Amino acid sequence: RGKKFSNLLEIGYGSGIFLPTLAGCAKKVTALDIHPETEAVGNLLEYYHLQDRVQLVSGDIMKMPFPDNMFDCCVIVSTLENIENSGQAVSEIARMVKPGGDIIISFPVENGITDMLFRIAGEDPRKIHPSNHRYILDYLKKNFTITRIVHFPSFVPLNFSLYVSLHCKNDVLKKL
Image 1 (spheres, rainbow, N blue to C red):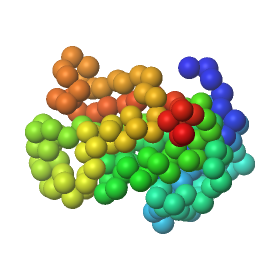
Image 2 (cartoon, rainbow, N blue to C red):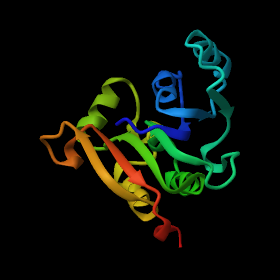
Image 3 (cartoon, one colour):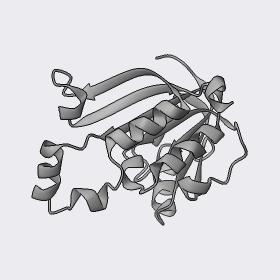
């Protein structure tokens, strides 16, 4: 809310849909994804006149091509659940974000309802989401201080919701 970051990293930028919004939140945005659609997303950035403020990088979340403590914020939406060893990815995020930096992260919740929705869509939920929300939350708690959890719908317990978003701080003491 009104906070302007110096150097923001988005992991798993996908179609680039969030990049115009994120560019308004930071002086510089670096977007990392492993997919081959960099040119198409680059065209989106040109359309919004953001090619000078947003850098697209092809790379793997498990071994990001950036020095330690480079970013003061990291945004990662619907990515960690797709990675078999998301704990390693969380450790890599902790390496990239400066001590005291912000991490905004969102992912689906695994339960009978979400499993059914993925099966209706013709997907095996364990194949497309090898990491579940409990596993991801465990690694987030080990690496960061979670300052806020929001889940949808909010009137049910977290484990029965559909989606969860968190704000975390990269805690210096957890790195020791």
